[in-house]
Image (spheres, protein in one colour):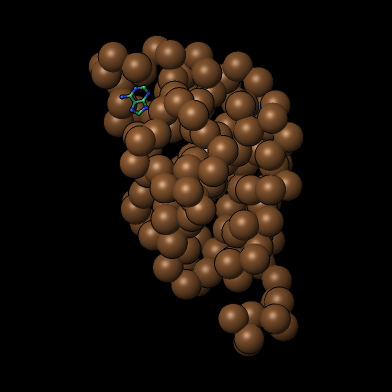
Length: 147
Ligand code: DAT
Ligand code: MG
């Protein structure tokens, strides 16, 4: 089953949006298989955002993501990587449509509430950066037969 890494960023935690965000993935039919509230280290943040190293917003991004607790999660389900990016909404504030998490709750590109992996390779790398294998819980949800 496909898995992805999703993370409520420090702004989402501070704004009390963990529940609202988790609800959206639950109601879509995805299954939560790991989660934890954590403050991420500078090393973890730099590994997570390595692709953006050198860009104008990189330092600010690392500073922001380490500035307070995040809620890190692993979700699974059919096409969860692509579909969760659709639920998250576009990166640019002006492109994030209403009905998406960013479109409904975020005003600025930097403070956009949530991270979602953008490919199977990123998902595997990002899950490994934040979770130990034993923290991922495989369990049967009988409701999955109806989703
Ligand atoms: P996404 O989070 O949608 O995968 P990304 O990987 O391109 O977007 O960028 C990572 C984060 O960096 C993004 O969530 C917010 C920040 N960011 C991206 N482009 C930015 C920009 N032009 N100005 C400020 N922050 C930016
Ligand atoms: Mg990205």
